[in-house]
Image 1 (cartoon, one colour):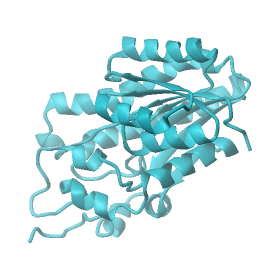
Image 2 (cartoon, one colour; image 1 turned 90 degrees about the horizontal axis):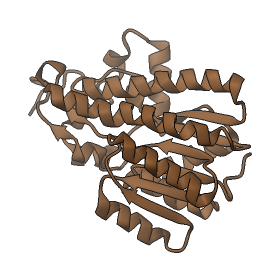
Image 3 (cartoon, one colour; image 1 turned 90 degrees about the vertical axis):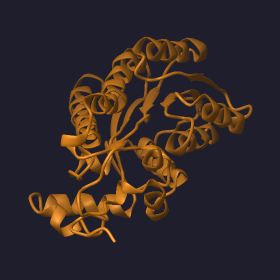
Image 4 (cartoon, helix red, strand yellow; image 1 turned 60 degrees about the horizontal axis):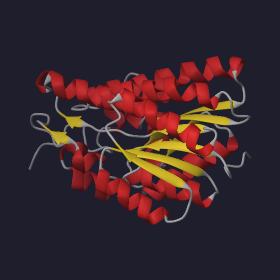
Amino acid sequence: MFSLSDRVIAVTGAGSGIGRALALALAKRGAKLALADKDEAGLFETSRLLGNYPHFADAFDVTDHARLKNWIDRAATEFGKLDGIINNAGLSVVAPFADCPEEDFNRVMAVNFDAVVAGCRHALPHVRKSDKGWIVNISSVFGLMGYPTQSAYNASKYAVRGLTEAMHLELAQSDPQITVVRVHPGGIKTNVARNAKFIRGMDGQTMALDNGEEFEKAAPTTPEQAAETIIRGMEKGQHRVLIGPDARMIDWMTRLFPVTYFKRIGMFLGGGNRANP
């Protein structure tokens, strides 16, 4: 087990959900935190909840890579080091690929993947100086399986998965003191589905993500549970973290039935051929 006490960890998407839960749980373990989110009010609330725990918070859009770099560099300067980054910020758009405007697709890729690449690129030189460091990238169960109306989200989360796997293999040789973690959350009671831009669903079908509030109610895992699972993975030096019973089931099904998995689990996920009432 690796201790996170006195470690400096940067967390994006810290204004709500898993990011806020990570900030609170890491602080209780003695970590010092650099927090970022586009939602200034949400980030302020996270900062308020942290109280006197050592941290600073900066509100900006992670697609602004210059601001992202400045925030990372500030963490290393202000605390004297940077031991890790958790690239957690994300968003989604609901639409079949043929109906998803290019600008919406590109926005999802910019937040969910390009900003993760930039976060890794700018954090890595600092983290390499640590005697024990972490690069943690949040993928999704949608980085394990395809899902109708989620082509942009699928593309971004599969890309995060591939990037993180490659970094793990590379840094295991060049910088074995750095643990590279890819995280696959299942359904989490956060605002991601609720705040997703809904353009259009599938004809004649009701998909689980068509109604963000209903998805949130059905999600089996709380942000606090997700954060604890991620942090335990960091402490144990795990390179792959599945969050929730649904994530474990999807992982098993996609391995066992790599071609027909969606036919088998679509109904469980609210997909398949369920007709609209």
